[in-house]
Length: 359
Image (cartoon, rainbow, N blue to C red; front, side, top):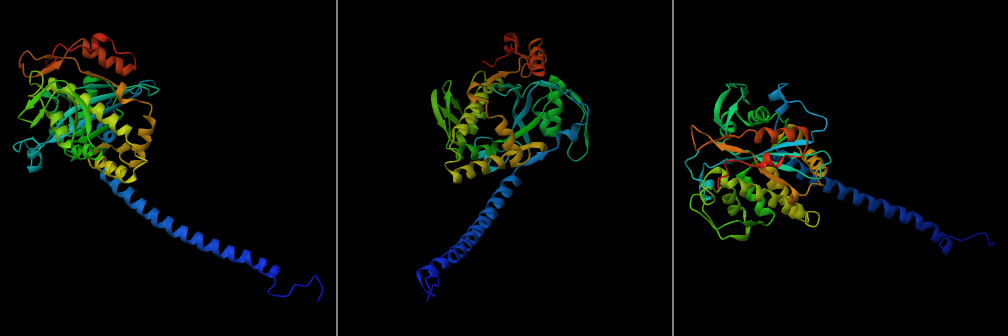
């Protein structure tokens, strides 16, 4: 046998066989990985579909048509954020909402303006008791609601739906609303519990039997039930009017946004899912945001906005001369405020002062 001939079973032949074993092992490993990826992908798809299906959408553009304010090229982004509140039913009765009120109201309304560059934002609260002119609107079922003067702002939602609220805001302000976001307060309770509560600095002792809220002044960490009572309370703060609680609502919203932003969502997937589930179950948006993908993209574009630096303003209002329990937009302050938002310019200090304060 020559030196060039290697009998079967020698070291050289065994070395030659190893690559085939490695290739076989590699195939098995890739197969297992593929099965795991498919299984994980199926789970992720199921989770995504479930969360995505929670979000309700409203086609604002279709409902409003072309009769809208012009969208200026440098006007930033404007969101109408509503907190809708139904106090009917046993659950809301336990939460201090009362069981005799039917239907839903837009208890909280804010126009959030994000200037070009998205490094800061301003939130303008519209008091629910503001008397406004409701334009003619088409409801979801296709029926028409006639326009009417001197209606309470929060009644527009109940009578004509969310698209009509957008139309009313655009008519009174001249501001083009780019996006609509509605938070249902009953679902909002679960969201607060999911993130572990929200800390607010209570400005004064609150003893409100109507909302069931009893808090001492100073920093307080509120759970979902307490948070819901906090944004609803009006008898335990200021003069007992809606104006008195607007400051609490603005303060709480900023604290909630800051808390969500500070959460280590990547560090706890289970908690992230719980938060996302609670959030999506309580959300209604315009149709262009009504998906997890669209919401995530919009959130990423807002990443530079710090909730702690967001300026909060109440629409300047004065007590109505006919009905002192209602307010009307005060001029020239409200006109100056809306003009600054339309044109994406600095809001004059005098446009932030309201004759009626609720103090």
